[in-house]
Length: 447
View 1: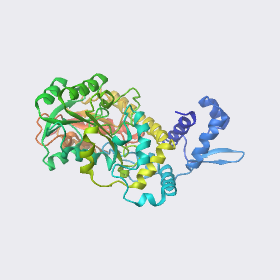
View 2: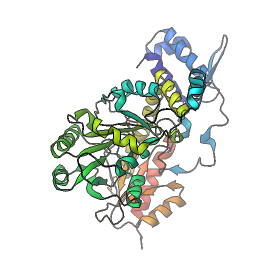
View 3: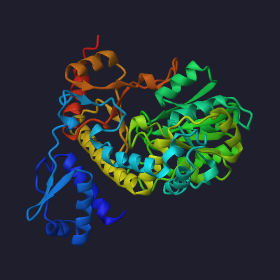
View 4: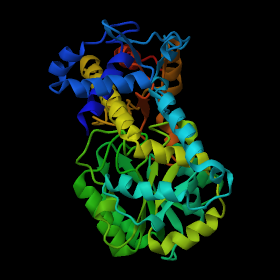
């Protein structure tokens, strides 16, 4: 990453966290160059970019100051509520101005082409850009194998319904797993098999048995930052899953929807270990930019392309949004925003872990080992009445969500847990929220 982008992201983070408050004077160019160990011209470039984003302003012969922001969403009526439920990005880090600039530039660049039906595979220039973008995550694919979708959910629904060349019928899902997809599978009566996944991982021997004897057409998994557990598979497991897929002719649907929300640069997806074209790689752009953007990407094996396109049939993603995303990535804005939001969430996870260590000394809850992403599992004693716990915490203005919805109906081996999300929990709220959870679990009186 270029030095000025790092500086830019660091200052933006300090503004958001209140270290540099509205009207606050920033370090002088000279002081900042010493602080960051770079040239004055690098600082000037970073400050110039911040001025373009209307984050700071300059006064001749005086210096640079943080723009007053009376409309900051943190000063809303929700200020006193600790939200551990939301999976949507923090409103305070939405890149409104950057993306608005990209939308305007897209209209100027592509003009009327944006308002035609376009290609059902996606805007060609975006798919070309995605070739190199995905390669940064060790996902190497030719442009013809990349299809832009209306979020990851659309790709998941198509894959569940379409036939696969292995001639098998069942979808294998982890338990627990992505709740919206589980509800879709149930509503559509898709044949499903299950395999248990805990914070400690999954039984590979059981996975092999399912692949060998279970009539599995594909295995749906989140290899990192699992929803709802927050945990990731280690390298050994990712390699083993790819090898089993090849051995038993089972496809893997790897939902890497949070690929850009962690600081684990060493992480290569299952796709990187696929030697036989058995891994379908999915990525979402909604979690890092805007939930309403509804843009995702599917990287498909050659054998699945025609069938997938036949089920997709028509253009269902905004060409304007695709063009804006293309420009957003090309201009380096995506990389800069990714760096900012990763640092933000990493800091919140660190605060969460510290709070658990501080208040959970009696071991009332078990937590998943998480240092990146946005989710963490708080596993509770079996005796806890979940509904009553949620009500008690709500009375203390702490919002939590039960893990029950992340299982298929009737799945018997459910763990009792809360899914904790730090996506919208502000740093100064996390400690008090964790304290409240531990205190309420410790009170007992469930009946």
